Image 1 (cartoon, rainbow over the protein chains, first blue to last red):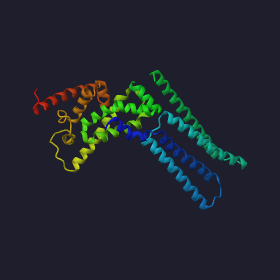
Image 2 (image 1 turned 30 degrees about the vertical axis):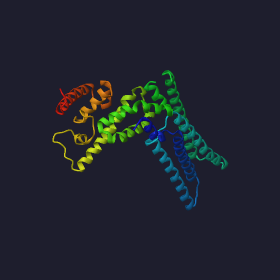
Image 3 (image 1 turned 120 degrees about the vertical axis):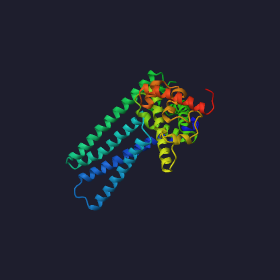
Image 4 (image 1 turned 90 degrees about the horizontal axis):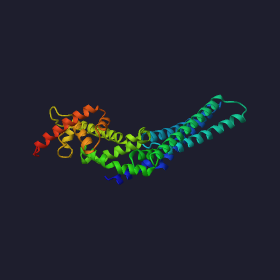
Length: 149
Length: 173
């Protein structure tokens, strides 16, 4: 097998589109599971059939998230640019899932401490993740310039 | 372009840089694997090595240390394959020579470079890394996770065994 054959064999693992799609699946699954889980936890008196449906949606979302984690850890890792894209997606998904929870609780004129604390913690984590990803990429770009690239 | 720059570009996510890295290092990796395992397994194991490189490259903390890191991965892949082969040989009731190295039964079946074929894995590995891959004593020590002194003693023993092996096969001393 020559180098070109080898490059063709592994090129699928290097596809940016594939890695971003995996990150979207992971974050989408997590966001759906988080929103539905918070609704489930904060909504009193739900009928049993609704609770079963919420449970199924949460399990489905977590399954997608687990699949994303498995692919990223075992098959297709994230390079510096991917990490920045993934961090932005994570921050956006966290924001999008936090807004409905905040709106609903404000409209009902009652605070849900569990929901607020969870949303705030996730937003802080997503922001830290983005800052770290950008710093890592900046360090690599600096090193690349030092090496004459 | 030096290896460190290529690795940094790979870590940034530049696909073309990875292609260049494969073009630069596939030959040495494939040659090492073929000489350790034979032609039949070389392609499969070399592919395993490159997939492991793809997985591990974003986490490589010292891009300047790429060659020893790459050969450590190759060595692990070769060791795993030898272990599998040896386990299969044991299950099949293979006849291992008394007192020989654990991998010799497998080694004997592989198509190896004439003189190296009869050497135990440890000595063969060091001879390949030092003489055929042209790596330094220090790098060989890092790849094999042994002290430099042990590398020297294995090289010495390997040279002696290779000389005996070639003499037995009829090559002039």
